[in-house]
Image 1 (cartoon, rainbow, N blue to C red):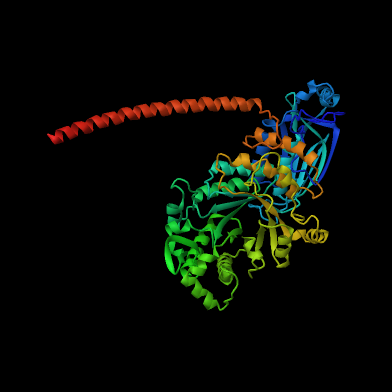
Image 2: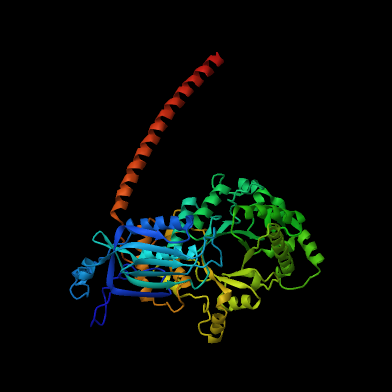
Length: 602
């Protein structure tokens, strides 16, 4: 807070921005609103799906009705109305205006989807939509069902409540995403993430128009994916036998995501980050040596010198492709400890057979083996796809292009270390690109920092003072598929994930969806305040974003909470009773056992 005509401001009263009401996030491409005309939404709203429909649309309509008529945000109140000279004194009177009391009722909502529904979303899916809110009703139009989903979410955000009634402004929206791929990475290997938390992540993604869940399933620390063809991967590699995802769990998550227009891309990182694979199947890993001697238990990347390793990969990924319907797989390829390969005689012999011995710095000598492994692995995956008459795509981390590996140009490179120069390098090599470098949410810091995520753009990250490079990137933006927010879980658990991820990930969501010209921190800050409260109101335990503020929860949620407390108390009492009864049974058994022991001793 600042005061006029005061040379110094010793009070330093920090406050979050005054939240908007009935404003969407992310901001649509074309958004025209007449603030002086509002319509009253009647409950129930007569929703008519005019042509194509399917389970995706019908379930989205049900969620829309719940979000509007149970969770719609109430008009914002600020205690600054009580401070003379604050400029907010007349705020209460603003909403007594006749535009609210004389608002025309809107009773019908028409939804038009031009094409028959596809079962699963894909990179090429059309998410564009048009939304018209006029005195004759509400009309949502889209070419594909995935656009209708985005339009339904926008409509749910622009409807707000005032004095227990629902209102919406005269609005025209024509909208589409700037980037096709707008992802969130969840790491379930360092800390196991429960299904409920993953569901919550997907709900947050839907509310922010994100459309790819990059699921980093396994890593050095654990292998929670339950494989039927190699059961010891999770049987011995999971952090605990109960902390695993079976095929039914994955099917549930994929289905939950599908109904929200979200693709689920699994990542099984290789050839590095595979130590947990060796708990059950050590023979597929490279034994590391020191001074020509084996170091017991010291295993490095997958062993590329053994045909059995690739047979293992073929069998495992044939199953993975059965379990995950998504045609894109993330193959990892980052932080490969080449030094271990250098020490291993089998891998050294493979390098000799490749006949590409060079003398670069220690470790780099194994780049030909790394390149050979990657190409052989990708060719195996392509053969599996070809046998099924289907196409597939593959994502690799930045190291592939950074180290000039000569691999298939249909691969997608995910930039996580560098900025615009690294993007250009990958584009020059013929790859398409995803970007993540500035959206690592696990790199948390104190205070307001969503602005860093919000102003970060793939077309000028770390090259803002080099116009020629920026212009080159902008000309080739169609090769930048989008980006991902990454939340690595070394220090994130199921209990903390949501509050760390949201609403900070929302900043990147708007950058990936909205026009590149939408960069006003002041405007975004107010809408983000509203959006945070909206996600909280809908039941997501999101974190702070802008400093001192508040969010009102609806009355029914308090009722729901009290019912839950009563239910939990009843369940607790039942557990206590069960425990008491069990202890009595145990005592009786113990008495009998002692009696038998006594008779036996006699």
